[in-house]
Length: 299
Image (cartoon, rainbow, N blue to C red; front, side, top):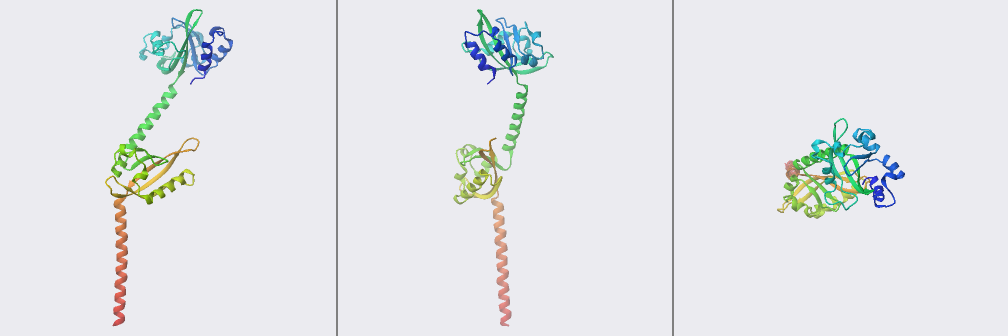
């Protein structure tokens, strides 16, 4: 919410104060962080505070008498001042403060920029007046675009990753899962989001996972990696390596975990087979050696 809005609301609703004669309000308007202008019933600018002048690149005196539509960009689609008011008062004009709208405005040098604007109307000496509260939102738009671009990159990386990735609530609920994890578990995305990781984990492995998460929450470790078993939708037991990191808010409160999940069932079987073969070979060699030694003793 804008700083000046509550003050103007009180002024507009008070019969004792008039906008043009209020020294106190004038001081507030002049030093407000937002651009503030007043226009008459013909939408001609009557006052223009310092911040509004700075926003548009004019001196306050240079815009007095101009029609407010002259500050709007042609590409905004606003043909006249009434179009601006129609946007602000799209529903009705009973409420003092109308919704914020975004329009494309232009500076004195012709440069266009996104402008956020709201308005209030009032009657002074039986004449309609409008107070416009304006803010250049160029920086916010750039930040939003960068955030959107970052989110799109994350979504692309998340969805196209060959490794299973998930956002997991602290109670174990799957908050977001990628297609690779669905392929690993055999469940659809919709099914996964109705489950917890405990639902597809072997009971013995749940304790290990919960213990690691507690260590993350209390700050004992920054990340964790563990081998565990999942129960696929078809009932098969598979081995996975799960790497976990904890996400906190600005105050340090734990929010959720990010998990990277890689299936290693085949590698696990190969390792077990190699281990068995090595053991069996060593055992066979030992048996053969003992038999040889016993044969030599008898000869």
